[in-house]
Length: 179
Image 1 (cartoon, one colour):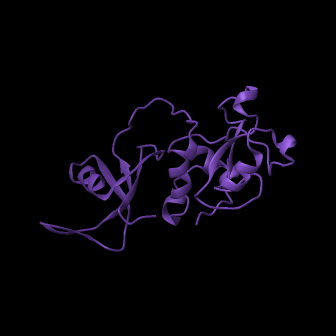
Image 2 (cartoon, rainbow, N blue to C red):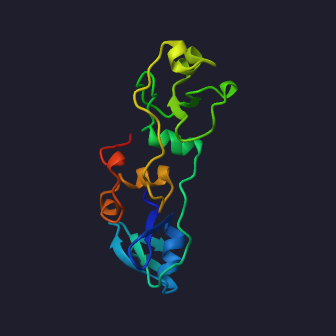
């Protein structure tokens, strides 16, 4: 996790956001948030050194509507662990493939989109996996994830040992470790 990012929790310890160190410091200095965990290195300002926060908790409950999991390219890649669902190659240079092609009525839904490397995408073309002689590693489906944070941000936050305690755990992402 980058050293300039801070996890912000609601008053009930529910994850609200990941923010910059600058915004986090202003929340603390304005008396809107308390520091739960600090970083090892302080932040230098014109007024001196301040302890840099790693995790903040708001002093009041921030009301917000129940967030919805957005279907996006980044969310599909994160759901599939940045792994081609046909050949298993891992990486960030992946495309999105329609399992049932668009010309055949394939919708843009969680159940029809998968991460795919460029080589497999070219091989499959506008065919179904069966027509192309390819098999999916697993059947695509909507994650059971409750989006306190966006899915890619949640997966990135899972790599921070301090933050992990405050993040809800989802079985489908519990063994994931990102590069």
